Length: 393
Image (tube, rainbow, N blue to C red; front, side):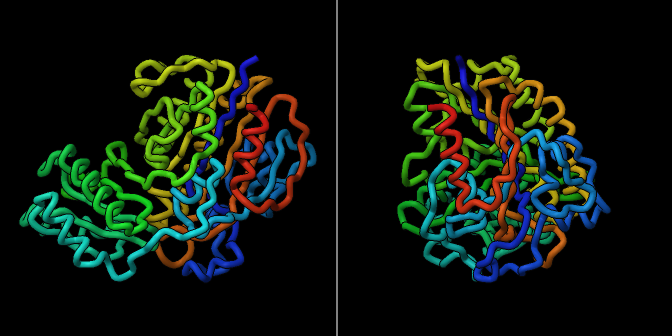
């Protein structure tokens, strides 16, 4: 009988500072979900509440339940990082013992010079750590005058390239990102992601176009659970930026999304069999095992639109929207399906700064006949891959 594992990552929904958070520039008060709940005077999330989310900690408005329908617990990260790539790789079983490189003073001159030379872009603007929305507003006029791309980083290991796609084609932005990825890899700079940040000026305001964002991650240095499932001839369906995070390794089908709403609706289609898989299958993929399947969804709005922008109200509304969709998703989880809901790091919108925060994450496991229980605190996001591997194999 067919077995499926469904992983939904609520991007950045951390639940408390890791013991080593100060080594990553974070304060012990960071707790994304708890502080978002406090800011909003509680959240209305009846499905997550029923699953036992409120039993993990005291989250304002998320009640504890004596009869949870899922298993619930807390995960502490083994990897040295607080970024999307590190978190997702560990969820899939790959622990990163060496942290990715960060560039608090901007990228070195030799790297930028090589990027300018190989792209032919003429020059770059910024080359500093910055908030993406702030830097494009600040440099938009100069960008239009010079036609130079805006290159910036953050506290995370990212090489970000922003430009107005009404002036420079989106395809050019993607090509420049591919060149940057190659230069970084060849130079052993150990940068986790190159991120394409397209924007347009809408009603006089530079506005990022989320649906056209692309991430160019380092290739995972070792095989993950996804590779194991793919190599068995089974489907691994990436929804959202999953294929970017894994640089397509271990993926058989992929589709990008422009919002959490779209990602959740596509997840529902993947579960009910209405997702047009032939249209999103990688070329050359031959599915020989129809008895196992992974559906892997990243919901990025919490992080990208609200965490990084210090918008605790919007963050809360996004979690409530996810809960609304979970009411539709849970009935689609069959007897031989395992649903996993978790996060990859924190991004507390209520603490100083706009960067990710080094936090523990929640984990919820649900299947039709699961024995509800408190899993306590476990070391390693990779306990998820172990659980799924046991489920599927």
